[in-house]
Amino acid sequence: MRALVHRYTLTDPGDVGVVQAAMERGELDPARIVAVIGKTPGNGLVNDYTRGYLTQSLALLIADRTGAPSQAVMERVPFIFSGGTEGVLTPHVTVFSVDPAAEAGADAQPSLAVATAFTRPLTAEDIGLDGQVEATREAVRRAMAEAAIERPEDLHFVQVKGPCLTAAALNAALSEGLMTAGDTPDKSMAWSRVASAFGVALALGEIAEETFDPTAMLRDFGQYSSVASCSSGVEVRVNEIVVLGNSRRWAGPLHIAHQPMVDALDIGAVHRVLEDLGLPAQPQLSADQRARLAAVFVKCEPDRSGKVRGEPHTMLNDGDMHAQRHIRGAVGALVAGVTGDTRLFVSGGAEHQGPDGGGLIAAIARRGEC
Image (tube, rainbow, N blue to C red; front, side):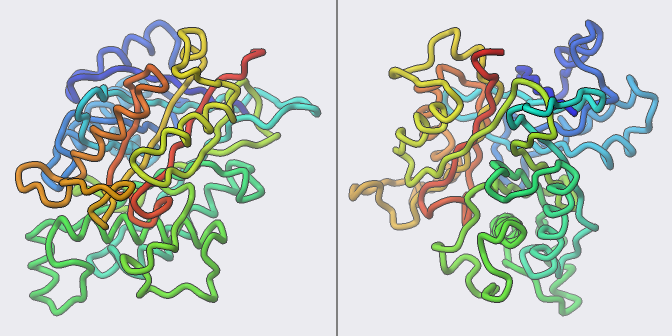
């Protein structure tokens, strides 16, 4: 098997013509697409409908090209979109395809491996609670097995998109006497991210099952997954999961690495992950190096202490702009300054995803000798 990764700039979630053109020139086989991860130019909050709009646009395109119903496409392909391209960030999609005919040689280096999984539909009583944690854990393990990623240390990025509850759904659940995580849609989004992150951590043994305590969620921030990137939104009803790692059973020139980010200014983590991929930036990637960079994924969080390296920040107090929009713009600029690339997946809401007040960065690149 061989993983293929293509990035396309998409400024309008209703216009996927650049992806269609790639299909028409034979660059992209719609039947082999297994996942799409991207950024849309919305606000990234509960009412960000650009995510669902882009999902619909791409599902209809793939359906038209493959002859499959669009619903069947959405049940096969995770479309995981994060809204919010503040600052220098560029709306784009990263499309993952798999060539099942490619074979890795006996002495092959570990290459990029990708697999996906879906949980069962999650109810109001699952979201942000034990049901979502358990469903995510099992789905991540299934995806790892499918990707032939045998060791947790070979798994470098797990992207999850889960559901959240709207005000109407919350009111309906409460009127039925159901227990929900969070009493507002915004809090429901956070709890969904957290439950997904704990599910990933349990699947990888980052948190031991015998010591897992649900009361640690949104309380003990020393417990986290070092590879989980979790988002939530009203456009999904299940957890959609994409696992990315390296495996000797996969062929091709692509490989992936990740690093924790200790805070919003951790430019060292950006340099380290690029160095792990053979792309030392001095201080910014050259044009030739940048051509080898296939994708970058970042998870970040405003430090809940209200300070960055001892100095106060205003992100949590701003009544005009959501803190997640602040942090995406700030960290996006930091990473773009090193990579020289603005087509970055930078997502806020990093509770229990990397060190508290920081997050993580993962990147995919082509080997220099390829």
